[in-house]
Image 1: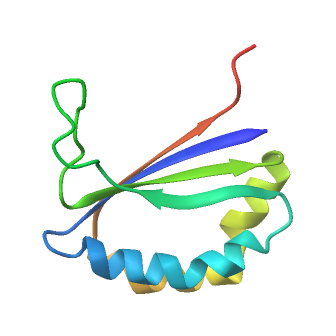
Image 2: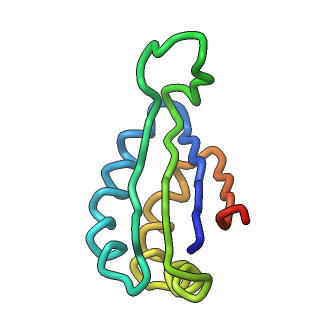
Length: 103
């Protein structure tokens, strides 16, 4: 299994617009072979000292894929290219971590 954490920081005030495009694209991603989990997450407000908040312009995409081939196919999917075209101008930074379970 492959895990992905994608940390997306929107240009100021644009997070909800990106999330709208993201949610519209989710059914196509969920239908991909090998998709186990794919969804956005945001900070829990005022959780306390234990939390290191990402802030109001950032969300994290939490993904699980059956294997590397499924993740690579996801990256090459036409609906992902369309999503990127809509959101690229709205994104300040994007950091992607591709992980595997520790042995």
